[in-house]
Length: 117
Image (cartoon, rainbow, N blue to C red; front, top):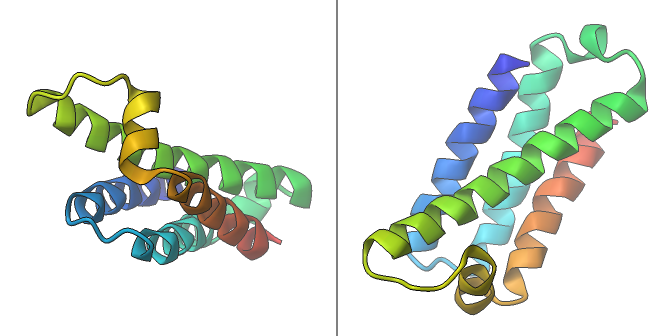
């Protein structure tokens, strides 16, 4: 499971880095890839043995994928604060990404859930 967590951390950095480049809607595809990669890492590192019940495996994969995307958003917010921003995290994400933030999060969750099945 550590491999899946590390994959999620790399995915968070990817979301953060591409968010700085203002990729916008392309982050939906990146987030889906992060969710997919996290689930593959979970499965390849013994996920079916550790989590033999499919619903539990799906829940763990979705959780790691969602946390990876949210961590990327929070690192983006922290970077903005360092550069002089004054908004709280929720306001910043709302101003920066708008409704796209929910689509980005949903893409990671759906991809993780589909791959964990």
